[in-house]
Image (cartoon, rainbow, N blue to C red; front, top):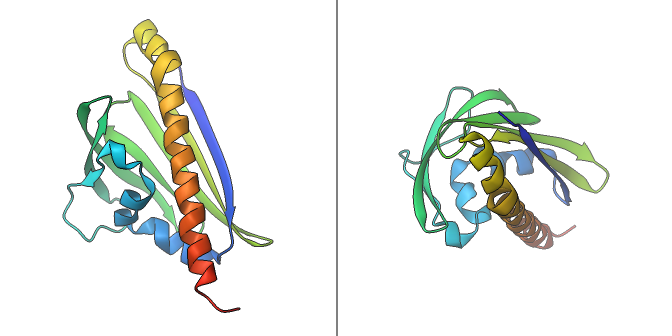
Length: 158
């Protein structure tokens, strides 16, 4: 099984507690997921990220509806949490969400380790589609996070 790694870092002009609070509210995933994916949480709401929390949702990729279940395995407010896929399109998915105070705000760091099923075929699908799609998803996410937190910052008289 070939493990791939995707890393992203972003600084937003907001305090650590507020940024972490945004991410621990699972409903906010809808705001930072591309609309074309038709992301929908099917776990009863409200759902908050905590150790042991299970979150079920559906997404659409390439016209296919996929059910996905993640488990929050680690939770250390306000600095990090980890979600792992229990059911979904990957044979392995481990996503570390890390948050730290930096000059000018809060750094958001994502580190995703993932693998596709189907051996050589999975490797080909990754090269032709999955790598590019994941990058697009996280580029959209980054743009939305920037917009949401800059709008929030503009709304706070300083």
